[in-house]
View 1 (tube, rainbow, N blue to C red):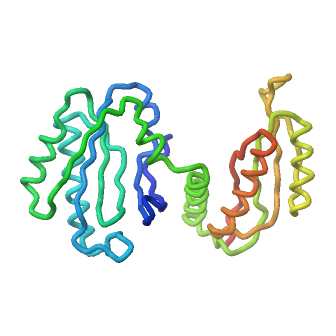
View 2 (view 1 turned 90 degrees about the horizontal axis):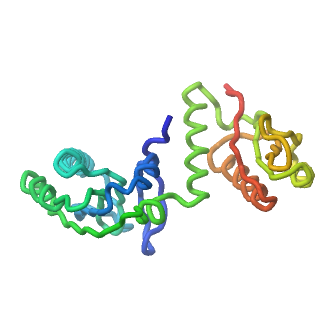
View 3 (view 1 turned 30 degrees about the vertical axis):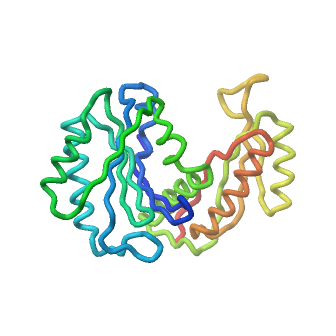
Length: 250
C-alpha cells in the first residue's frame, strides 16, 4: 500500500509555504519516461499578509486544479507531482513526456476559466530533481507526517491523545554492542527496553533492534519531540528509527 498524498508546512524564500505532494512517485521518477517539468501558477485573489490564501476562494482554486490535472493527464500524459501555496501564488507541478505540449493544454484550460490568469514555465528535469530534492519533505518533516498518520489512526478508534500510556518504539542498529550502549542511554531518559536480533538477519551482516517503551501522552507535538529525539539517537549509533505504536486509550 502506498503513502498517497500528504500536506506539510515549510519555509520557502523566507515565507510560509503549504505543499501538497504525492509521496508515491519515486519509482516513476526512476523510470525516466517523463523528463520535462511543467509549472503552472496563478495569483490569489485574496492573499493574507503571510502570502497564503484566506480560504474564500478555495472552491474556485480546487475546481481549477481538477481541470488542470484532468486536461494535462489526458491531453499531455502528464504526471501530477504537487501543488504549493507561497508568496501570494498557488503553483502546480507536473512531469511530462518528451515533446509533450503541456503549455497548449494549459492555454485551453485558461480559456475555459474566467477565474484566474495562468502562468507557465517548463524545464528539462529527467531525474525529477525538483520532486526529490525540493518538494520532498526533509527527514524531520517526513517523520512528523508519519507521526500524524499514526495519531489519525488512533483517533479513528476513539483515542484520547492526552492520556499517558505505554508507547513502544523500535530502533535499528548495526550490531549488538551499539544496541546495548544505545539502550543504556535511553534508560537514562526514562525508557525501558531490550536489544534483540532481528529474525531473518543472522551473522555479521545482521541488523539488531532496540525495543524501547515509556509511558507518554501522544499529543502530536509531544510525541513527535519524543520520536525525533530517538530518531537522532539511532542515527548517532549508525542505525535508524523504525516506528512507534501504542494501545488506544479512551
